[in-house]
Length: 270
Image 1: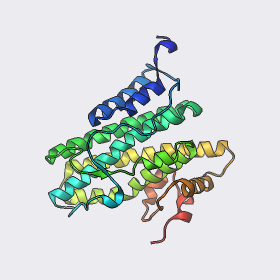
Image 2: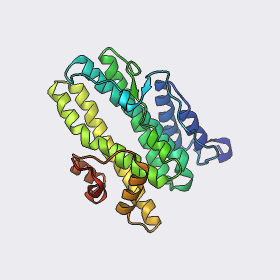
Image 3: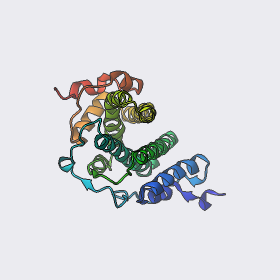
Image 4: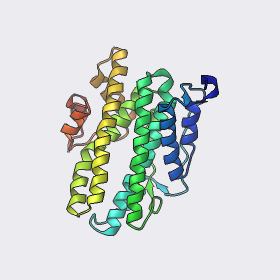
């Protein structure tokens, strides 16, 4: 099949981003990654990405200040709230990875496309695992309201690949490295072996995702002759609305190539 006969990568990504139902989006993301890996998509960026991805009718999206309290962590209500929150994070992460490629892939090396499509497939798999976990608790994704602000970082960085790399993998995903070990310990203490396996798998994958983002950020900064940690701090200060809060999982961050040279100087004092 000639390149002209193949669907463009950009069109396949746009279609996945504009797929709303959760399970259909999971399938679409995994199909894009597979088709790219098998050479079924042309490396052509001939359409723009949507300003925002399609979403399922539920969950209801609320401002962070309007989100209800989770309840006691050991109660069924608290456990459902935790797993639902994680499922929502992973669902939005599918779109973040797809948009990374569709929006910036034309100007980046082939390895950038390969890496972030693999991230999209991972996030889709994580969501599927969490959706099954919710089903085991007698509920489903969409049963509770969810955080409306997760796409905001993508909107703020839509014109700058350096800013997107600095904020999404190197701030948002890196935060997952910090908070997941304590969450994993609590789930194990509750005797939830299946849940612990899911969290351990996600943590391992997220270390790789942060490493991917850091590697491409460093290469991009160095191509412009800029010190990567200095550039990262500047972009985070410009484009990230929150603060970089300890405690940090320094060992996991270091394994991902995100040394304290990046974040120690701008970490919030607690």
